[in-house]
Image (cartoon, rainbow, N blue to C red; front, side, top):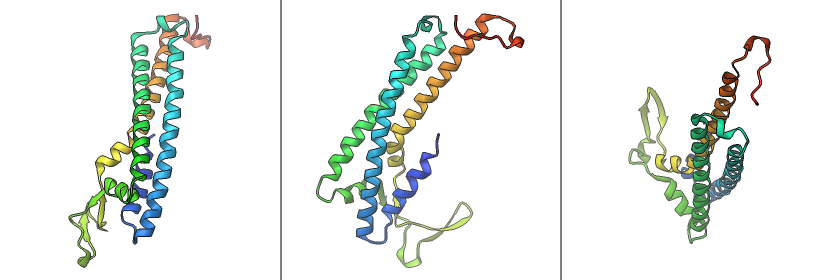
Length: 190
């Protein structure tokens, strides 16, 4: 569910610290195309999840579901719609930014900032978290990582809330049946 963070961090780090301008342009264009595809998938999937949540409210048993189910499903719907909105806004913004003169350079400047700890003369070596590593000349803005991952994470949480709400509805019906659970004859329906 949260494996998207390393998959977001590594390509951005590579494009920000490419050895030359042509490589940076190529990596930035590849990242931009991949991000636009991702945002498109997020918008489509969030719309499908929204439809499933709305459909769940229209079932015959929805009025008898506990309030927690309704709260979880409404929260899932809200997160899915917010995910669609943010994914659309980011797609439009990325398309507009890349169509400008020096658009790919502007995307790189948006994603990263000059690293004040980078010193080209001493090769940028420093000690961090008890291990020696090389300091990149451009570091990723953490806020940009959060912003560009927001639609995906909202979609993940929307799906999680919907599933928890569905489990709440099924479990509450099983408890309401008050039957003997040991015989394996438990029904979730009426």
